[in-house]
Image (cartoon, rainbow, N blue to C red):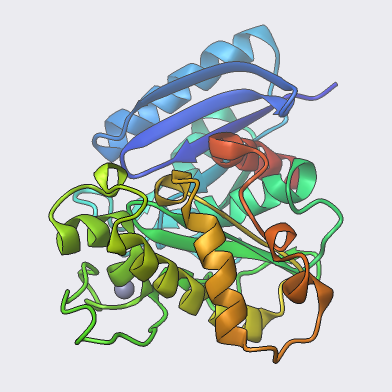
Length: 295
Ligand code: ZN
């Protein structure tokens, strides 16, 4: 029975685990993301201790990005143009592979989470779906015809442009690159920037949520019309508010306006746009699933 390592490499914290799946996570550690050297050394030490107990078949890394997931590229395994200080153009996969002597799988945190939901969660049995997270940013990944989506680099679903009615919402947006892109209008920092308080402190009947649902629905409608996903799995800190998803369901149906005559949308939209089944474990489980793909 083989054992895999997984690293959920986030901009604020790293989660490292060893196991085979959701029912078998044997060891887990989490620590703050500091400098690349210190953070990667800490991950390596954890896996070296685990390897002392039982050898690892491979390690998967589910990373924040942008990053290079192309195994044929000279910068495969690098985080590339991130604004996070100290982390731009950092080789993440290389040090792990050299120190542990095992194959390393490497992809975006959201593609990895999509893979975990496909294996064990809300996307089982589907071959074309997307996974979105709405938190400090908006990230999206997923599968088309059973393959994680890469293409040119990897999807950046958070940075699509959506209509912005400046009369209704004079907030300029929070994205350092685009201002009022999807993430700039609808991620957690936009809620706080627009209303002057953190999203989790805004009451459920605050007008913030109608506007938030509007932006999320606009983004989702674009993805539905472009990729034709069989399901959309949507999580992240902002989606923790239970009143938000039903508002999104309603607005997606209104915006599509009867154009897509399929039961998923017309009758069962609460089973079409769904929360992650794996909750906040999707990231680290996705990393383990990435490891399983390369060994
Ligand atoms: Zn942007």
